[in-house]
Image 1 (cartoon, rainbow, N blue to C red):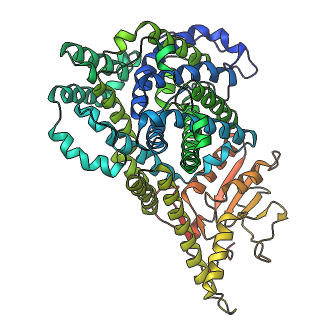
Image 2 (cartoon, one colour; image 1 turned 90 degrees about the vertical axis):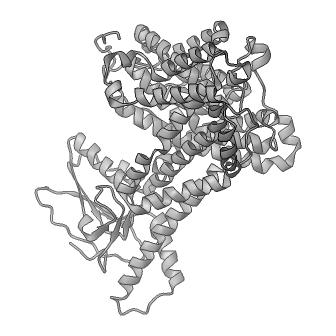
Image 3 (cartoon, helix red, strand yellow; image 1 turned 45 degrees about the vertical axis):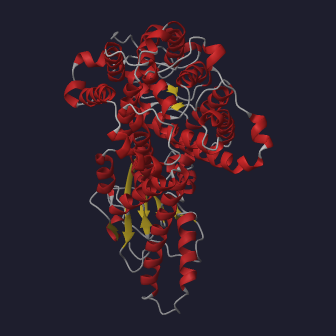
Length: 587
């Protein structure tokens, strides 16, 4: 790996995108080559998992690399097709094509194009931050569902079974026993060894070796699998098939006219667009946030600009017959390890991938389908491994419940959007139940007549979705009549700027975020006082991030009131419910 040169002379001393970033071409070029070697098999595998021709994944990766660096939004991200959207694309193709993948693909391209247009529109209205407050338990459930869907859909290819794609997940599960009985031993052996190699190379002991930093595990596994397939003389039916003349045989175009003429497809199209937009948005923003944390130059991505870049990329990709495009965690991490500095690494990656496809088709077509299936099963396992559920459970049993509902409904309906809706509804009902319960306890200590149950439910919804600020600074926000002003002893804090909060959840975090971003910068001491009925995990995580940001900026910031809440676990970000008979009566 090349040693790092002194930082450039930009105002903050950090590598920038655009023309100034071209000065880092030596680092980005080398990184682009290494990332291309990782991105090529991943793109081929994602296309197969989506039910599309392998070349479509490469097309989308090339377009992403050529477009993203020109639009910016992030600094070290590598974008392209991702396994997270494969199940949604597969379902969309089967639904729009009424069970025929070949007929469904030109129609799902229309959905991808519309998804890109929606993303551009959302970025204009700067709603990229909305996804950051998506219920974390639902997000974990969605990702786990995607992982399970990927694994189930790849079992036939992994076993060497050449059958049409099952139309639903329950149907695919019922077919597994028969597929195991009819498996091809040689195919399974190659796939099994590849899968074992991927898990072995992912161990901490192996990853700590210096030589592993320069040899991407997916590339090594695919190369060895390809050699095994060549030595065993696998028939062409069990190998990947990329056309030698991509321009003449590999490009398909969206069929807008058929969608327009067949009104019975409009609802399915709308559902597909909503699903793709939601998954693409959440994965995009979650990925850039994760990659920003390991960026060696500590640069901050702009979520709305990145969302716009993904939207434009998706529009262009669909028009050329490519898949959906989102930032990739594996590829972006590989870029950092290889020494990439700017988005030009994504540009060089696209050029190398185009070169590989143009001149290396014969080698690519020697890759067995079972090897790519093993790679996808490995990726799927990382999304739904037991440790993921154990981590969710460590935060709280209610988090595991929401995630499990999301997974169960997704598998039963074969629809990711249905699972997301079910998980979100479960989350809202749980929060509403706890607030109503707390309100009922409060009413028992008052002499006023007990209000109807329906009124308490309505009060709970207003509290969960309304402005959570009771009082901020010297101003006051009117909520449910006149509320008492609390006094908190400011120990070791001179003239603290107090922020009193009611129930706080992922449902009303945006309103809080708008107010906190307008806080005066000249104040040194900030005091957040929790005085509501519930504070969920997403809200706790937000408050801790806000406190850390203030402390990092040189201010003092404390969070008070947690002692009046019952935590659902020992986790510092656990969901909390008020255990006081009056959540506003402490000081």
